Image (cartoon, rainbow, N blue to C red; front, side, top):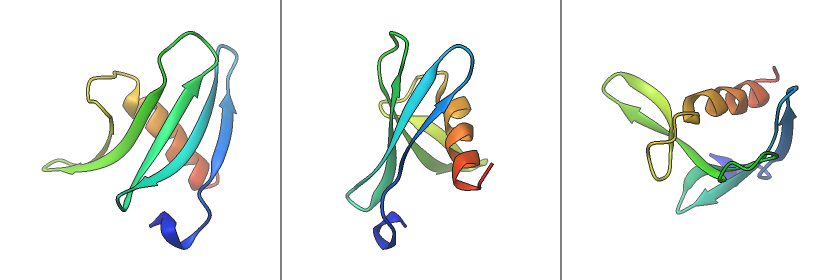
Length: 80
C-alpha cells in the first residue's frame, strides 16, 4: 500500500487532452484524483474487486472513462 512510499503525482498527455493524476490515501484505501485539461469534471478513481476480478471504478460510480484512465495509471506505475 502507498503508506510505505511517497504518494505520487504525474501528468499524462496525448494530442487532445492532458490529465493530472494525484495519488491519495483515504482510510487506508488508495485513490486517484484526476483533473483534465479540457472542461470535463474531475474524476476520482479506485480499484475494486468483484467476482470477475479487479477493475477500475469511479467514485461515485458511473463515469465511462474510468477503466481507460485507470489503465493509463496502471501503465505509469508499471513503468510503461
